[in-house]
Length: 340
Image (cartoon, rainbow, N blue to C red; front, side, top):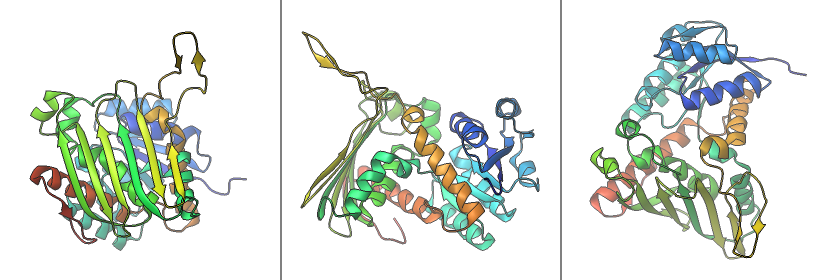
């Protein structure tokens, strides 16, 4: 029996916003999609109509003024996150915010201070923590199934680059794409990173370089507990969405594989082969998106600390900024808990 339902407003009706809208409306019993806001009113109205939300507006502040809305899910453009989170907290709304909170530590810290002062719940959208493969890898570490961990290796490659218009405003590969891997590294190892060394190039599309970003990178992490980590990123993998992790330790190894449409393997006289991995994050991580939003709703309704806090979001941003600096200056960058 469902004791109470949380009324949630969605801010930003783009690709990820509509995914969350679908889950809030149809997949999470303790949530109700109460309103949708988007700067393009037609988008807000279309999303609200499709997922039976009773209200659609083009100004998120009208949504925050609605007493029926108890919490908001922020899926707007990255450069609007910190202001919307601050306004929502000041209005007494609980907040789920897609990464990052902001592209600067200064505005991130100011936003977190406002959230703490308001006393509302803030959860950051690092959905990969909720993926069954990675949670099992984490359990193998905490249960000492691989002994003392020595090495971590993360592979994260997109099937194709995002539009150049997106790249220009994303904040760069390290704080847009690799930030998920930085959070995953902290989550898996359970320790902070002390030093970052990153090397990056433009190898996929020269237009990405013209826009001021990179598309191929390797990052080395030195953790406070002695573990050495590496992150392998590319904006383009010809065979699809490549998402794998390997943890190697004194007692063995745990490794995760890509997810596929099926487990079928075709063997004939010429080859043994299978279908390509699930094509992108919306297919690969569907279950984890539902799980993270369910956790947020439960946290607001039942109390407690969200599984991914604002401080987790800050820590991943610190690593992203440190990697940017390292790649730019071609040197290791020390990371302190209080600054980049």
